[in-house]
Length: 341
Image (tube, rainbow, N blue to C red; front, side, top):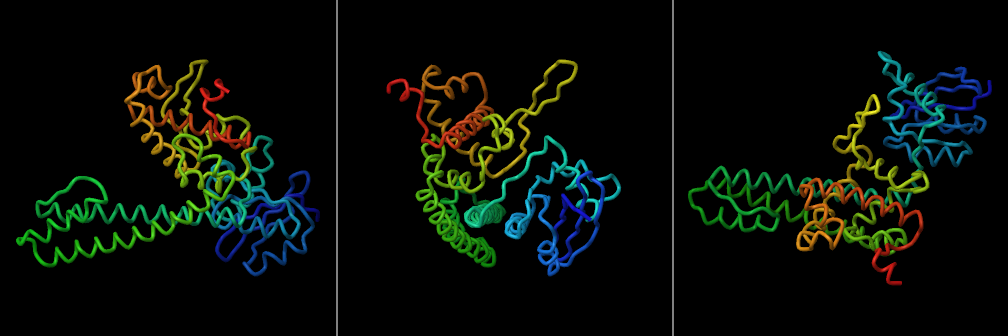
């Protein structure tokens, strides 16, 4: 039995193996316990191992690469079309990995290093705490609104809301203590967020790729650190448009009969990076509104398109600039500065 490719479906404790030979014939179907996985691949001759790029995939990819195998990761959405209808199980998923990897136009996901995953853990924790902080703020506003008290938007206005609650003697004591407890919890979250942000900024200052990305207008240390840790191999994207498409910032196409119809953005790829790019574009719009249409590309676009559409278009342009900076390994240089030089 000579296996050239093994499809591996990972799980918490049970792993499914699907092995094929050089002509694609199935030679092996087997389930392995977690403790049996590494001994099995240590005895197996070097071959290509294919997995979905899901939770734990990068960990197992590093281990199996160290054993001597050629590990390839595929995005789950690229594997899904090859799962046979009506047969959604571990065995079918492992077989679909081999089928998808055998296609000539398949795109593989670069394997992340331990350092990259460590930085991404900081970003994931910060994003989670920011969501929780927003939920607490909305809960406080909702409870206070039940008693007719409102304040302007913003996390900084929550303390003002608590003062109004304490000053209103008609509000029951239980409600006061509840709102005050939520505020204390919100303060604790703010301290944790600040701690994570300090570590992220430190990475952005010491990492060469992140420092180059930070020279792009609208890219701050958090966005620069996230992109530097996420994009392991910019060479996987042939053009700047491919990189923008990976982030889901290109129009969705619905074309037929030679007629091209473009809709909204696809929203594929990394949603967190896309969100940060759109938010940073909204900040750039604030400054572009005060300029004449001939002064900048964004100011000219705001004359013809609504602000939200312009923000997404600016995020698309920023993504293409990021691709150029990463590909050429240099800092961002504005066109005006290049012409003057």
